[in-house]
Image 1 (cartoon, rainbow, N blue to C red):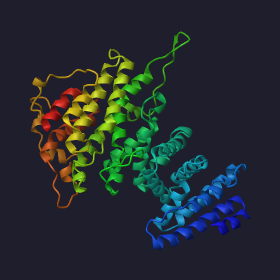
Image 2 (image 1 turned 90 degrees about the vertical axis):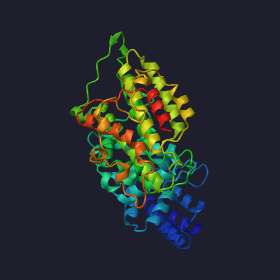
Image 3 (image 1 turned 45 degrees about the vertical axis):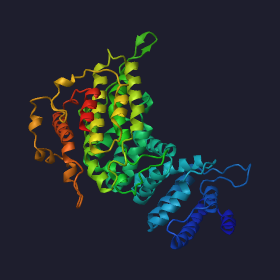
Image 4 (image 1 turned 135 degrees about the horizontal axis):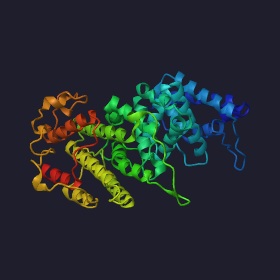
Length: 471
């Protein structure tokens, strides 16, 4: 590597960056012939830091800075390299060498350039770069993933009106990147403050993606070899937990945002509604998203069984439901139940429905005692008494037509039930156990089609009774 470095020192910044990619391509190509997963040692990383990220090797030396035109040319060089390299294994290891965080002063330059590179790849539809970025998001700590997500959201949802359509079009080009991007933005936008509510353009785009193909949010899970114990501090296998958080907290977070502040003793002017009609109503978008999340949860039983992970791997972690309940409590107290009773009821309904379907499908693993303890922390809402409920295996009121809904009615819906999904030689672990959830979703989908608000005014406490009887 020292010989390569000396030759690069005589070149200008752009030609040196292009040359270092050429040399490392040859180096890693030869490494891959002898080892399927070569170790990226310190030498290649130092060359990239010095000649791509312009971090000087000598201590105390001032870092070089590329002007805007040079940086754009560098991004074009990198885009072209990944596009022209036909071996995915070489692309992946070069991308990893370039952008894997090293915990040093080059990381800021590394993350800045990565955000611009992926943004350019979205704009010009460079699929190899997006696929490499998807792998990077999967193996990189979440604190860096949200930085990349923030850069893309700023570029396509905030800076230039209408540019979100460019980002939206990559759905068909790289679904794998879209799945990881959704997981990243749900980690970024946790609705803990008004600044962390997802922008409307972003929300609308994600809902449209999931409505078009609900299996999008399972792509990483379905295509990744999985161990029962997942690493801590990285993105989850699916965005399900983050999407549940969005749906549950959205009514409360938007109510908090709409609270009219006082400015110099006068009521502040009302913020005008977003243009675009009912299709851009965030409440309707979250309602559609909630329905889609429940339908995806219902699909999971057969996939977990296929991977021999049913009962062993929870894709919706109980440890993540605990802080969600605490956040709902905090928001409810902040808003005052007298002024936000409908929003609190809706949030609790969505949480109850998500818990019920997740547990019935094996996506959420916990004990009855854990569930009782969790739900005892929730605020009180308008719950029905248990004695008024129908058969605890059913989620519908007595006499409802849903009692008479047959399985073929459900299978005629746009999204298939687990029994309809491909699984050669496999049977769902317990089809009957999911029938109440299917009935609930059948009713939800029909009300959704009529534009009705989220139904099933049920308390979380009642759903606990249903689930505990289920076991």
